[in-house]
Amino acid sequence: MGLHSGNRVTMKLLPAPANTGIRFRRVDLDGHPEVEARVENVSETNRSTTLAKGNVKIHTVEHVLSTFSGLGVDNAIVELDANEPPIADGSSREYARMVRQVGLALQAEKREPLVLGAPIEIKSGETTISAFPYDGFKISCTSTDKQGRHTQFFSVEISPETWLNELSDARTFCFFEEIEYLIKNGLIKGGSLENAVVIRDDAVLTNEPLRYAEEFVRHKILDIVGDLALIGRPLKAHIVAIKPSHGANCELAKQILAQARKPLIASQTFSPPPAQTEGSSPKVAAASDSTGMDIMEVMKVLPHRYPFLMVDRVLKIEGNKILALKNVTINEVHFQGHFPGHPIMPGVLQLEAMAQVAGIIMLKKLENLGKIAYFMAADSVKWRTPVRPGDTILIDVELTKLRGKLGKATGVCTVDGVVTSEAVVTFVLMDA
Image (cartoon, rainbow, N blue to C red; front, top):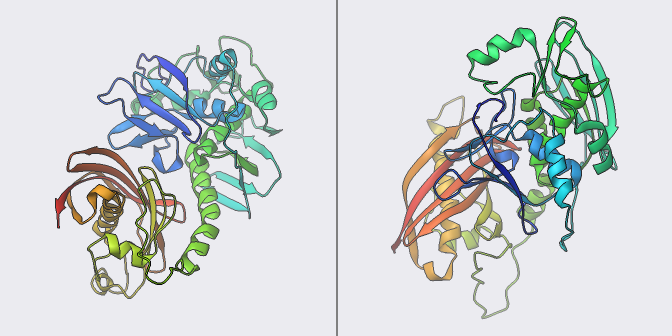
């Protein structure tokens, strides 16, 4: 049963090829849509972490992701016939048993950890969570409630052995006075003493003795491991958290990724275009190429021109995925009226940027050369934070469907790792 939804659910953990990452597959929905376990897909962080892609949602993913990260699993498919994994006993014990029962297989591709280059700190209300450069993965955490009851501290170097022995059995918990709020907000429909520990004043309500002396803070660390798994790579850093939350954990994951991407963006933005020999024609890359495109190459694919070209550079193309950037400057014409003295990039232009990037990945296919991608529809559009002059927008698009002339793609715009907008766009290919 799902903890918050109360839905009955069957979950299967399946192997996956290298470079798949962790994906959640909804087998109860038409087409068996998948949602990648990436921080860009986080849609809600109220008492758990929810992933969404279009209208497809997966709630409470942190315990499953903690299992994969803790045990060193890089690639797997999680099949579900409902919108939330089973809560089991409130810990990751059962998930760990499943993984250990079938064992792990080595894959040939190189495993590249993300090495933190500089400290990062996130503050949100009573929560402070920081990351420091460190040759390993370590988490130090303090957990307490508003009254300072049951204050606990624990610090652990994360490895498959320590995660399994020190964290995996720690159960989720809540304070008795929170239960009414949670129920009124449609949460913990599947909660009981079979899958959670309840703290009432100084009493601990549980159907078995506490599994660790510091079970509460250890479960907080279990959650941090799961939320930071949304980075998509093993992490080398020391995390120091005070009263952590899923929202702060995920924000830290975004900031870590943003820091890691900055050197890549800078080097690609300022590097000269590749030299061409006299008489040679520009290379037309296939959609599977991982190489980027400068502005001259972009204009050979897209028909848009000033002031409506919303892509300055393509950083990479991998299969059906493309990452591009847009440099936002005060010289753009829309800032004259949107708004004088308070310039903000119109959200619809971010949507247009997603559509143009989706068009690039389609129009670079050899069979589509010479065609034009017409923007037809936008669904699940969300504008989250304003974009201002001086910002660099990263536009991350994945082509999810292509049937005949019709295509559909999901797009996410971020600035410094913070999501500014997202949408599902539909377009049709026509002859120029």
